[in-house]
Image: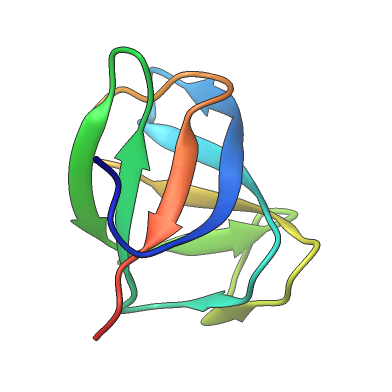
Length: 85
């Protein structure tokens, strides 16, 4: 069961560098705790590194496509939830 607010989904995953590209419908910032959830995916992680167009950023606006470093494999179509504080 997912917790928090659904803020987007995974649209791509770069396996070698462990980076997920997310299409987000809500703003996110460094330090947010995210829940990645899919058919084969279920883990929590804090946002520690985030980029748009290869530029490091601290927060991303709704509607952005943002690259986030992840600790585990994610898959295209996995949902992303932001956990409440």
